[in-house]
Length: 121
Image (cartoon, rainbow, N blue to C red; front, side, top):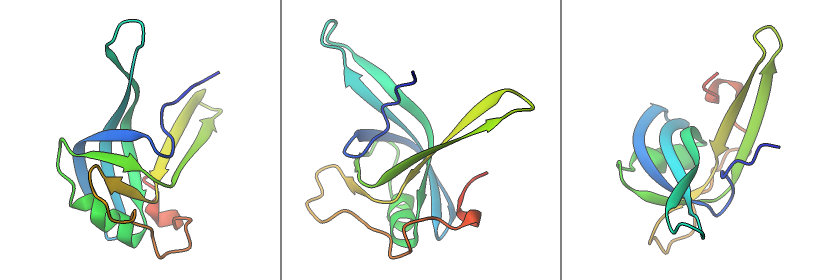
């Protein structure tokens, strides 16, 4: 079983922001959880995530390294490459809030499903 700490309402720290288009921004982020036994924080998820949809990608492009966000609508898909025996995961965010921001989360006015050309693969 694979447990990935990438889910709705998770808090994440942004490390690198890469605007790709007006409908797609890639962000390298990490999500950590405090280990109750040691008191130390342990990373549950780390990697590049696609922020898609016009409103979400635009807001994500304005983030800075070090910003903390609360994930809203998220999706996690995977594809298995039989030839190479490799499974790849594709996390996508459709809405989020900047930590401390009291306004409503950004929601895409698009259909909610990114167009084929919005995916990084």
